[in-house]
Image (cartoon, rainbow, N blue to C red; front, side, top):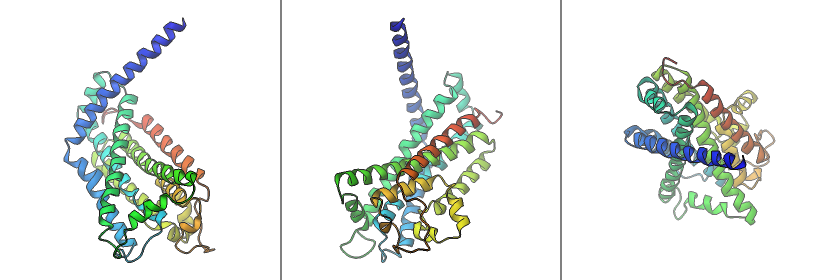
Length: 301
C-alpha cells in the first residue's frame, strides 16, 4: 500500500514537471516574440526609474540616502503588471486560452505558469535597471562619486548577519513588488471582459501605487503627509516591499531612512522588518489567490 502511495506521488511529480516545462516553454516563446514585452517590462519602467532618480536627486546634486536609493531600484518591478494584464486580457479575447484549456491545462496550471514567467521577467527588469543605473551613476552627480556603487557598498557594512539581511531583505523587497504587481494585474484581467478597460484600470492603479508606496515621494515626505494619506498607503501592496528594502538596507536604523533624522512630526510606517516582509508576502499570496477565483477562460465566462 505504501509502495502504491509513493508511486502515485512520483507519477504526479513527473506529470507536474512535464506540464510546467511545456507551459513555460510555450509562454516564454509567445511572450518574447512580442515587441510589447520589451517596452512594458524593460523600456518604460527603466525610463521611469531614471526620471524619478534625476528628479529626486535634483539632477544628481543631492545624494539620497543608500536605503532610499535601493528603494528606487524596485521601480522596474511595477512594469510586469502591465504586461501580464495585457497578455491575459487579450488571450481571453482570442482562442489562445481556449486551446490551452482543451489540451488539458487547467486554470491553476495556467496561472501558475504565467506567474512564474512574470516573476522571472519582473526580477530581470530590476536587474537590468540596476545595471543601467550603475553605468549612469558615473555620469549623474558629483565627480568621482557613483551613488549606486556607494549604495551597494553600504549593503556590506556591519556584521555578517547585517550584511546577509541587507541583501536578503532587498531580494524580498524586489520579490514583493513583482508578485503584488502580478497579483493586481491577474485579478483585473481575469475578472473583467473589456480589454481596454482591463489595461486602463491596471495602468491607473499602478500609477497610483508608485507614489503611495513611498518609493517616489520617499518616507520623509510621506511621513509628514496628512494622516489619511498615510493610512491609505497601507492598502498599497508595493509599500511593504519598499519598507522591507528600506529597513533591511538600513539595518533597522530609522536615521538612515529619514532625510531629517529625529523629526517628531514624521510618522514612521514600519519600525520592525518583520512587518513589511510578512505583510508583503501575505498580501501577494492573497492577491494571487483571489485572482484564481476571479479568472475566467474567455470573455464569455
